[in-house]
Image 1 (cartoon, rainbow over the protein chains, first blue to last red):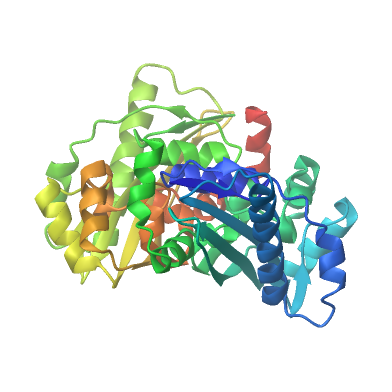
Image 2: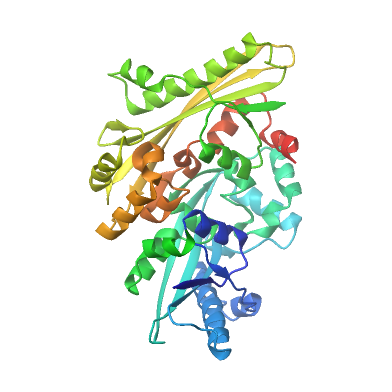
Amino acid sequence: MQLILASASPARLATLTNAGINPIVRVSHVDEAALELSMATATPSEIAQALAQAKCEKITQELADSNELAPNTIVIGCDSVFELNGKPYGKPQNAAEAKSRWQEMMDTTGILHTGHYVTFTNEHGDRSTAEGTASTEVHLGELTEVEMDAYLRSGEPLAVAGGFTLDGLGGAFVQGVTGDPSNVVGISLPTVRKLLTGLGITWTDLWNQAR
Amino acid sequence: MQLILASASPARLATLTNAGINPIVRVSHVDEAALELSMATATPSEIAQALAQAKCEKITQELADSNELAPNTIVIGCDSVFELNGKPYGKPQNAAEAKSRWQEMMDTTGILHTGHYVTFTNEHGDRSTAEGTASTEVHLGELTEVEMDAYLRSGEPLAVAGGFTLDGLGGAFVQGVTGDPSNVVGISLPTVRKLLTGLGITWTDLWNQAR
């Protein structure tokens, strides 16, 4: 069994690694901006799910086209979108946008949606798919001017959907969550476990690959 | 400014490190079992808070006694207790206890309490203290027999309060939390930030020590 993560996110890779799973990383280079533009009326969770599917299908197809899609291969695509007041937020474009967004979301609650899409090519070469979006409420704390300026200077907000992390410097600024915290980091472990179980794969068998 | 973590827990150290804080670790060797026995009528959160205080005070006193308590030194003690059906659970004694506990807590909700106790010795050598307990609801998933046996075989449940982790192999078995996830790992970042702020210390200034 091999597991391929169709994502360049170091946070997703670390989440899987910490949970005992060592995937192979393969970056899809999907044109996310174009796909988002084509979905002007979609909800934030629909955007996350569509991007997850696009990433997973692109990598699965690339592997199939180059005869690299070995039997017993899982490909996982994920995409995260932060929803605040009904609007979707990806990565901030610059420090000014990150700051104005933080001023809007401080001391309030948003929702982090992560779309998950999985293809599984079994021992006979037959392909099945599963998908699921997980949504976690994130309760953001209040920052002083000094703390906010220091956080923006760190550069971290520019690298991540919503402009904050739970697993990095931002962790001290998140008061709490309602839902799965790994989903906020970018890949919901219980969701992936459930999707794989539905495809006939035992989660804990994947640990053996890694140990 | 130096920060001392009075805990041997690698998960607490990693939580601080990931959040930009690099503490010095100093293990207190408090007799936890004796202290717990002396608190037979205490609630789980009272036990966690008393143990956190004992660890922090022991290290602070050891440093003071050996003239190592430099000006601008923060000492943090933490202790975590898992509460299920009103009863406190620390680390399981053996695999059989871990298994029977998992059978009890599967598909149900418990509360992870972490006590935090901080001493701050300022530039004049004056000492101030702050304390706070954080409590996070943990919603545990359902495991198949195969998954549970594999998890017990990994040894992880024996090393941690409550017999599960959020940041390790156990992450895939936690459906979600209500509250601060870093508190479940063993040190609540927003709580420590709040306690330090109350002592006049700016959280983001501690990043500079680490970078």
